[in-house]
Image (tube, rainbow, N blue to C red; front, top):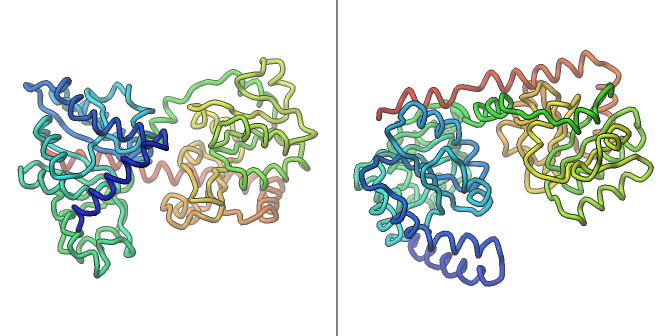
Length: 407
């Protein structure tokens, strides 16, 4: 059944590539991958293979990639992606020797791929469970590790109809999972080579914090400002909530870094901010920035450093498919607000329990929370300290994984 589904999916991707630019890039990249490997693989080298579906999973695995590269320089790193959102952003990443797409999981593709590389070890980040690749790796006695994986009872592996597919989990040499529930669920399937190590994303956000950039325009914007609110990865439903509040509270400086940076979205944000002095990061002079009330970040790559300047942060996506990265904000010891669609996000739930994260359901609950912070500076500071403590207390997953691996 799996093989049939894969070929149907392959056919669907081929058709979709005719109409969708993102799918076209993925389709072309997958077909080119074997040729890339034949051109770039050094037959005398020893390779360790990391696979990440997309950019988020790559960032999750990055601390481990860089630790292994530093500790074991004799090995070369192969990094593969499934999605263009990962490959296109990180195709020039200097921490890997070869970067390419992973061809779709047919038996033929898996054999050709592994014949071209012959990795000595493989790491699959979080939710990657490719049936044919994993079975062939196991058949060839190549150690395979699942990193920062997390399991829930509603996943197919634990349903009565998922028994056959669940066999793929027994292809892994070892699981490094995020929580105890994941370990218990795997134990039900007879899988005991499991360690609860936490999430490598905590290591990554600490790395990002240490490498944060000084941003002179932002520094000029926040200079002498007693209160700064940073909204990161925001969507229109998020913006309608927090902008409504700041129109009535001009004593706050507002920085908006939207998830979608397109002219129509940026114009929409500006239209909601009538009456406030609004500038865009890439278009304003330092003098204009200094006089503005609102700074809109109209470029990528700055958000993790911008959180440094916040008194309070808001992370978007919680009124849509799900919140974005709350840890990038929390690491700076600031309270982190987000929308109601956060139940599937363990780090958001952890921040809520720690008292460093806060759920807002609508404009009224947002206003109530902001007023509580304004009325009690100690409460706001304590919440920020709890957010930072939550991140720091859960770092170290990469070191735990390395301690279990023998090269």
